[in-house]
Structures are given as structure tokens and as C-alpha cells.
Length: 373
Image 1 (cartoon, rainbow, N blue to C red):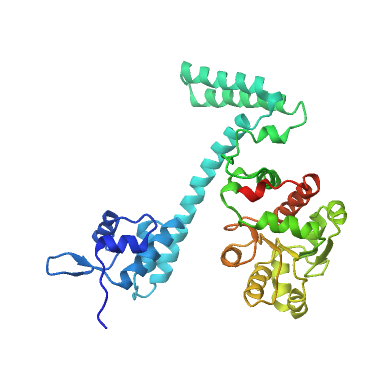
Image 2 (spheres, helix red, strand yellow):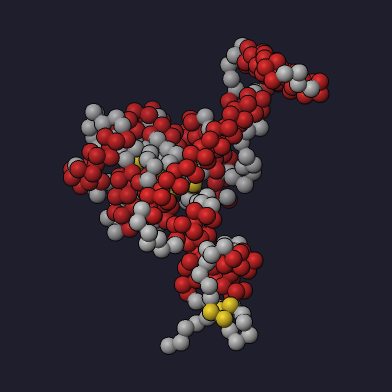
């Protein structure tokens, strides 16, 4: 059977993801994309290998890799020590990104101090902004003098802030991104997660499946089984509210000495009883994973093999390689889920997610706003 060739226009339409003919030509120019054969009219003709290659490039770009590093990752390096050289280059790139993030985070902290004040802080906040504008208009006499004046403004703002209890809902008014497309219950869930970790950027990494809130509320109203991966999850749950709903709380790795991510991971990996217990969880349960990535992986595999039918999985394990992979498995599974992509997570956040839904289920049992979003 003859090979099916694609024009550059058809290639970009097949790959999708916003890739354009101009980008394809640029990738050829820098040697990132293998050359195509030419038609009698000298037009490039592409095959399935080019489609797959472009999809790899697109996926790596979406993960934040620069083109020079994508080139090194995809090319067939036969030279001795090439992998070591690439790792060193990627590590240098990572260090540079962390330095940039640190500087941006420091700027974000300053903006949060100004924007995150509640109504009781508004007067002093306005005065602080006015003073900063005045300093800018007067010009900087010296860097040291500027630092001292700015620092005195921060201290005045801090003194006013600490003179009253914080109204957290008001503090988030100018910090949260536009959530008008979210339901009232989902906005409350997001707000509580942000307050639990103190990082507004969490919003952009939070993943809530379409049916997650509906499935969770239905399961909670029926008094479902709640299962955490280690005892620390159960300790952080809102036991009075869950008891009011008739939910039993259980722990998968039921060992009180397990308190860290590393211990939880090793205990589950080498503990056959815990793996067997996972397969005995009741249909319609809510599983909460805040520590061990292997627990989340096993849940996803059991769901895929029809060995487990949870109503909801809250998957927020911690780790730098296994945890992101486990979360991707959860996102690609058929089960309703709440997760945080990447390395972000932890037991407190996982428990906070369920506590927020349990609270709204009790306080607003007849609310169905989440069904329209």
C-alpha cells in the first residue's frame, strides 16, 4: 500500500494545537523537524512520522521546554556522555527558572500585601499606594534611601493589618482570577483550597472533573465510606459534619507510625495487605489520596479493570516524578476526580477539598448551581 502524504496545510490541521505552517517551516530551518520529501512541484510532502514528531514537539512546548532543549530531547544522540550533558543543561535551565520564579514570587507577595487587604485595611492601603506614587514622582535619591522609605510604608501597612482579625473572603476579592464561569459551590471549594495553602496560583493547577461535585454530594448524602491513604488524612477531616451525613471514615494504610510521604509510599509498595484492602473498598466510596502516589496509581488501575467503583477520587499525592504521573492517570480515567496537576498537593489540601464539599452539602442541601456549569 502506498504511503499517504500530507501537504503542510493538511499536516497542521491533523496535528492541531495551534501549530501553523510558519511554525513548521521554522522547525525545519532550525533542524528541529526532519525534512520532508518534495513533490515534482517542489512542495513538501509529510507522512505519519512527521505528525507524531510534531505532536511530541507540541506536548513538550506545553510542558514549558524551550526549542533548544526539545531538539536535544528528540534527536538521536549517539555520542558518549550525551545524556549526561543533556541532564546538566536541563538542570541549569531548571535553576534559571526557579530563580525567575523566586523573583516573581517576591513581587507577587508585595502585590498581595496591597491587594489582599480586607475592608478594614482599605484606608491605610490607599495611603500606602499614594506614598509609593509620591516616591516615584520625586525620584530616587539613593537605592538605600528608597528601600528604607518603602520598608517604613510596609511596616505601617502591617501595623494596621494586625490591629483586627482578617476577613478572608474580602482578602481574596482582588486576588482570585475571574471565576464567573464557576458555580457558587465550586468557587467556595477553590477559595478554601487557596486559603489552606496560601497560594493563589493553585487555582490554575486545580482540576475538577465535570461530574465531581455532583458525584461527591450524592455520595455524601447517601452516607458513603470515606477512605484516606494514611491516618493523617482522617485526622484532618471534618469528623462532626461527616458523622452528621452518616459517613464512616476509614484508612487504607492503617499504621499510626506512618506520617510522611516517603513512609507512606514504601509502606504501600511493600505492604500487600494494604493493596488487598484497596480492592475491598465499597462501591460508591470517596477515596482521598494526599500522600502516596502508588496508592493513586493502584486506584486508577483498579478502576480501569472494573475492580473498584468509587464515587469520587481526590488525588493530591506529593512527589516530583511519580505524583504528576499518577495525577495524569487520574485525569485520563473515567472516575469523577479532584486533583492538582504537577507536584502541588498534600494531605491538608486533599482533606480540605472534601471538607468544603461536606460543608456545602449540609448548609446548602438543595443548591443545584453546580449542575449548570
